[in-house]
Image (cartoon, rainbow, N blue to C red; front, side):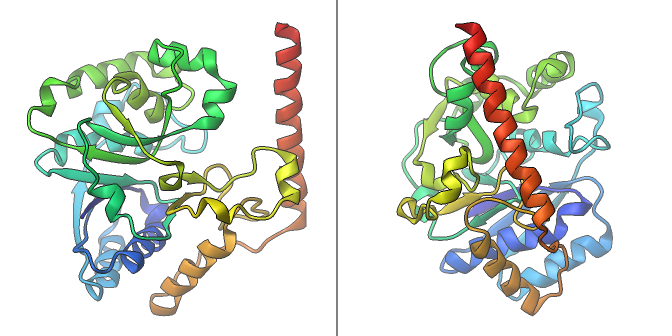
Length: 301
């Protein structure tokens, strides 16, 4: 099983948790992890390799640079690097493999993913729809994809299927980079919009359980039990992260479980102490966002 991660120095310990959760639930598989990065130190790389050597997980590092993206816009949360765009290098660096599963490092794999990974595919990318964006940003989706079809996906989990002749069905890397460097200032979701723009016609959609958002979209959800009925296999902590102060979302205990498993073997320390102040702040943000959307909807009417 080929996995790929894109990280910078600040996400080394988060990678340990994500990759370990995948190993723990898929230890019967031979796992090969490809890590695309720019600023990892020799110490960072050694930490990753030493930790996973004991689990027979093979690690390969690809050192890249920012030259391709020098004119692209930065993310609001990462104004000093272009790390989010590095997953585009998968098209260039890992295209000799049959399949590659890309995972963000704010994810835990909480079950067997072999059925997902090895499922028959006739498309280039296996993805999961981003239903929240589909519901609230139809005009923006049309702007990005050129269509009002509900085919916008989240780029935190992407199964790349390098089938024979795939290169004739997708745009070139040069074309993608040119678009990124000239149009990125108009993109809200950065690399996610790039993937949705160029690969909208070559997608295979999978069940929500393979990229389940552990986030409250509505205030009433705070009063409901955690939705275990979904039995998600890949849990994605979009928005606030479970290691941050005042995290409000589903499945924090699951994340802490894998965090503690790693911490018992290899000391990590990025879990912030919870705070009521930050919880209240987050509730206010959710409420303000919902009110803002409702007002916009009324004005449009």
